[in-house]
Length: 628
Image (cartoon, rainbow, N blue to C red; front, side):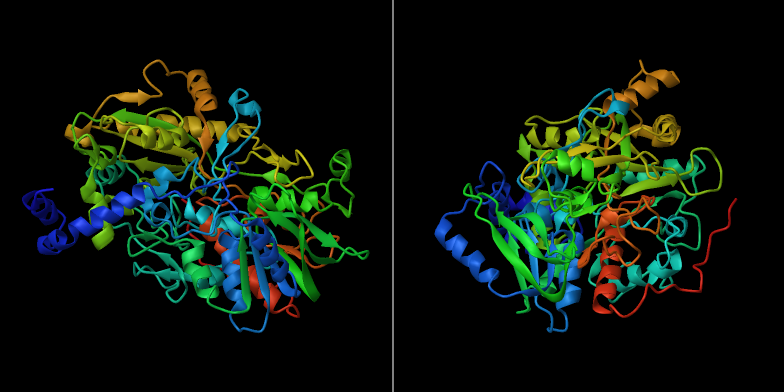
């Protein structure tokens, strides 16, 4: 590239051109390597085992001595636990993770690298099975298959929901007042927002995105002109969550902040933590008193399926952190779950808990998309130039950690109560400064990644039923945990969710057509002019609904008979097992569920480290917003 072109681009990005010229060749070389930075894998997506005998010997050494704690799953919650439980150096901890170890992969570090992660070796690539509410469609469910889990593959949005979300759980010790200190404990707020609701000394970083597309700026103007109040902090519980604004993100200096980089990087330096990636947990092991004494696992990519048993010290615990799909799957494969289902698969029943795998919840989504007549303004246009990838944003990110690659694309939006009442919003709009290539927002990611030609400019509204009421379940397809379970998300089984998305489509159309768009105003692509009546909108939703990647609820916490774990997260009916991840969430909060999962894991660590302390209940309530 000519230095004059580099200098011109650098000046437009408020960088020092001499620095850019000096390092451009090096940066582009690194970027070129990054484009092909996907290592060899087996058909199962696991790194190949080059020396099986050596691998087996290594695992035998790993299980030679017992552990105080076995963390069953190295996702976001598992990373939090690993850091907290090893901090004082006195406890021996083993973490087992089925996914890959390379959470420092370039595409994971770059927020916009999410385009490369869906349906990749870093993704479990689950699908739900024949959703009745979606005309029998299977819905693609992205889940992170790497240390750090879905915090390595999500859109980085840093939301908690509202105070009422947690008060409504009705679980002792889990009200808004109880959980707020744990949100703050883990957080490192780099934006200077209210210290009443934000922490600054934790490892879980919250930043504003270091990029703002002109279309996103215009969206904020359109939203306020339409009467939506401006909200500069959707995590401030002293006021209603509703409004339009920028979403904060879990990023640090322009890089993705994952559970692995925030927590596991601190813990893995300690000698009392052993991390084994590429390991599939087959079952939890129980003695005759229904007390867990360890786990059985094997190696991903090992066709011999050689089993290894990691044992607990007396009084030790297994901490399940495999997520809303993996945690109930492991429990059921271990004989803890609905007895009739387990017996039908030949699994010996340890404890009959019918609610294991029930109460699955997610945020369903549907898209409205517009063409933009102005050329070269959408993020998709800015990423493609010269007949291929635009090298300048890549160079800018590598050298300065700024620019459009610091955005996952949906960090502007709004929360809205579609029925006009003053309660918590039922709709989240995630604005994207690009047109979609299909009505299915998840499919668009992979379609853009695989496209070779330029994509016309546009803008889109992803409508998310952020407090969805529908529930589904997870069931085993086999006693073998290598076989993916049967997932029924139950999308739209509660008609209120369909109403929310229908209202969201209507509102997004109104926003997308407003005169304030000026020279950016374009024609509607999806749903399109042939979709007008309520019935036509409903059919569009059913045929295009996709996940917003917020799965929770399958090991429900609470006091009732429909609950799997108690308020201290111990699995009912057995000893020595806790579930410590998003699967314990009784009712999905109104916002992305990564940060609530961090809070759950922080609470779990406090329970484990202080077993003599009962669930603590805070008496001072969190300030509540006035209801209009």
